[in-house]
Length: 460
Image 1: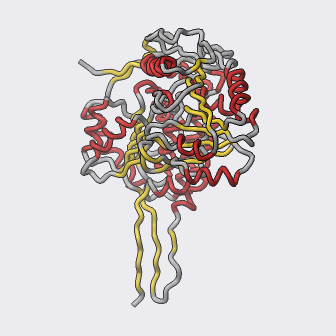
Image 2 (image 1 turned 135 degrees about the horizontal axis):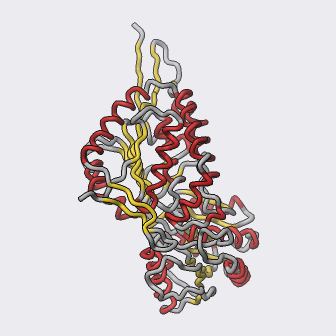
Image 3 (image 1 turned 30 degrees about the vertical axis):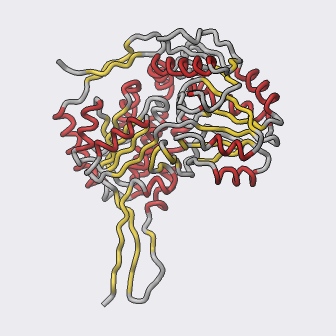
């Protein structure tokens, strides 16, 4: 019997699409084609590669009107937000534009009788294991620079968003990319781990859970493949007394509830200085009331269902536990907190929270946020660091020097001031602690997708 993967739509619980899982022969063929294609591709100049990849971006963006409702059906994001077109173009074009400089040989200072430089060479075959929450954005972080650097790429997309992999493949074909250089495979977990363990993959980029990252590391053990792992998060925000409160409220509500809270760098806990705490909470709750839940295919809907009921039930459990321990609920969501089994979950704001509650310690990845009063910067820093994760942290203040000083003491990959939930492709995207290892985008992203090679040439 042929094994398949079904996309269960969060909109109505029905099967939206079904695809056959690749068999052993198909996987073996894909690996062989990638190896053959990358040899020829490595001889293509970076400038010529850029032409192919810019055509790929054009082709992908041209399908956005079709992609937007597909995303709603697959993972629940409301159509009003227009998909991921803007971010995909920003990240892709930036990485294409900087490729020539980032991949250029690094010449060493003149030394009489010697020529010395460090070159960047492709790793070989890169495997991208992409998540469903931002299925295009997370994938292009590695796919575009991976190809620009001279590698072949095999994409294994999340089962919830399988059609995204097909959209990538269609756009690559339309751009005229050499056959086999990019391939989209539908794989189960066992075959994914088997392929990684085969030693035929040179770099794995995985975005997902901490446990998923551990499984990737175990599968890759002994192969000497390099890894890029973006795993869990519990991103904090700190609002200082000199913050522009209206700006902080508006942006932190968005950072907490956009994409139903299913954002890698979404804000999951907020610490507010006592001097502005009451005013901030009042404004935050009032703003959050506008984030209404509904069918994502309705243009008026701001918050759609979560991608699956399991994730929604986890948020319900965390919220109920917090309420039992004394937290206060502010939104009285129209969907009962104990209505298990539905992916539809309205945003919730909790106060009177503490770090004995799971909602302030463990990843929620859903539309709930806890707001906690703090006495000063020191307490805020201590609480922000009281987490096994470290992807981003945002500081809201009129004093950017103070933001930098505080940020230097916060255990995180990115420090924001007066913004949140954004990825700047000119800066490396990385995390610390259980959030993972490696880094994507910027010139450092290219360093992680290539192998340095030294040239030491002596004249005789």
